[in-house]
Amino acid sequence: MAKEIRTVEFVVLPVTKAKASKMFQTAGACRYVWNHFREKNLADYQAFKNGKGEQPKTSYFSLGVEFTKLRRKTEWMRELPANPVKYTLKYFADALREAMEGKKGFPKPKSRKRTVPSFTIPSSCGVRIRKTNKKYSSLLIPLVGWVTLARGGGNSQEEGEPKQVVLRHDGHRWRAIVFYEVEVEERMDAGEVLGVDMNARQVATSDGDFYYLPDLEKKEKRRKWYQRKMARQVKGSSRRKDTKRKLAKVSRKIANTRKDWIHQTTKEISEKCGTVVVEDLKVKNMMASAKGTIENPGKNVRQKAGLNRAMLDTAFGKIRKNLEYKCGRVIEVNPAYTSQTCSECGHTDKENRKTQARFLCVSCGFASNADTNAAINIRRLGMAHLHGEGSGISTVPMNREIDTRLSYG
Image (cartoon, rainbow, N blue to C red; front, side, top):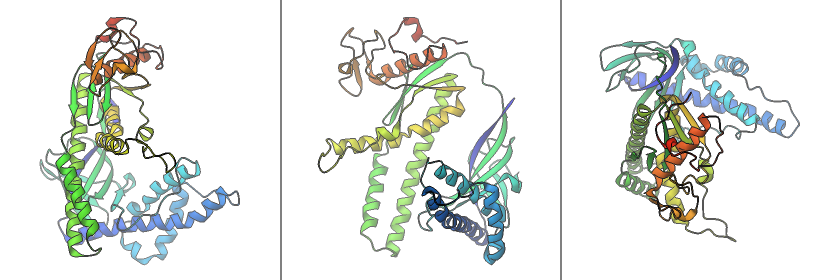
């Protein structure tokens, strides 16, 4: 049996104000350590980039040595758990390494008002979780004590070994994301292959099914109303704080609705097949603004902005990430012309898709839903990849039998 890491999210009930206060202090110490080491390495980073200095140390071990010195001379930090605060440097070391490699910019400072309070209990602490009853468990946080973990459906991975816990405050209450190492049986793959076409607020599959994102229009309007109201209010006033809490509440509801839809959709897709074929979408390029420049202003700017919001709502990246661990295999194919190619005769023409929803081939007259037609073409490219023909082959069907459920070697 193979071992995998699975996560379970709990609501944390600190029970006492003293424990809750200690958790916020720990999160604040993590923010302080991040900003301290950022300032310490900023000059070295700039000098190195200008060719006038040595490369900053980017290993967790070397930063940990400096942390020990910092903790010894900072009295208030000695009253807080060392390992959770020190583990902040693991994230900082990764961010600094990516900056040195040119993948990202230099790590940004963490703000007290804008940064979400959070800290991590690493495996080096020895994560301790005990079951209280079917609904509740208890977690031991170093120098804080035992806190209650609640989850409506119970702990789905209680047989696994807890390796790490991330505690994060969502503006309303603390949440614990527990990483379990579990033994899983290898998925019995019957050779089912499914093409998946991700579109704005919906997902279509090659077997003709559709999964629509729940209507969030009312909640979105409510959120925008609170945003505008808060912008008019005086900063620091009680009314503005009250509006901010209401804004955070409706934002959480939107995020939770989207998260639940993604999990339910990917679960249903994974139960139907062992291999999923998706498009290798460059989402960042797709969401580029259409407003252009002063000299060359763009067209249909408002419509493009609405489309960008719809793509953000659908969360293509999160769908892909969920499919990766729920399915046996995920194959990426070139998305070029999948929506303009006829799945019946293979004719490619932009006139085939005159509307967003309807596909009508100008060559053979084949009519279908445009997204279902695209999903079939995506599946065909995935089948070609599985049979060793390469992922860049034409979507022209060489054999109509390929559109049936085939097994592969």
